[in-house]
Image (cartoon, rainbow, N blue to C red; front, side):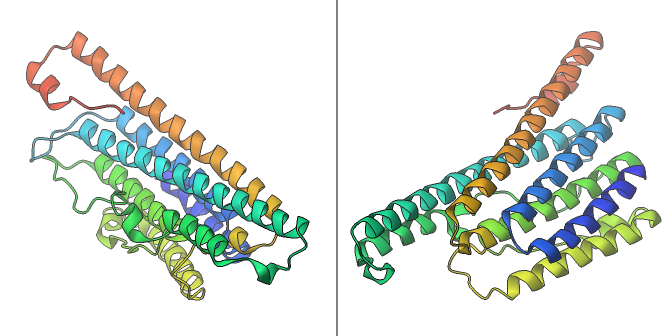
Length: 280
């Protein structure tokens, strides 16, 4: 349970950061770093485990490849959000500079410019734009034998799903924040971890509820007058998202390489047929 002892500290730190930094790009950066760490631990569990079959015909490898693909899709959504926010920032800079050069006051911005800015936000914000993002998977496959490693991996997976949901709600639109308590009941040691995760979700919900505006992004940097602060925040966040993306791609390649080696050493047509994946 060393995995969860370490994650417990990280979850508490993320809650403290939320209280300190509010809903900001800095907090999103820290949440993404936590996702990267959890993915590493998720991958490590799979690499150290046997490959038990599930009653529905799937196996460990299917679970990892599916979840890692969801993370890659989420990273692409975050990249798109970063690009949209940066484009919005540039448009605001151009508009402000033009009005400043021409001697207009801020109130002189015409309707066309205002509508242009609103259209940029609408490309980013709103559930309809991002409903294809798969934030979490409900239900847990049943293994044919009792498997503590799989229970642990599923607890890590659900925690990743929750952090993804928090990030989604901070950047795109309020998403359902579902926490499957049963996942953490497999191990008595996870009681404290589950409690800390619940506190993080409650803290986030309170922070999000206090903003009262579901019509546009709520990150602190988007409300600042400083374009430079938003630019720097986006650059740092983009760097961390790219790191997460590369780590997941690396993990998928490692798993596929190990599976290919295993198949060469122990040919099994049935197993090979059940372990075919589409790598993006």
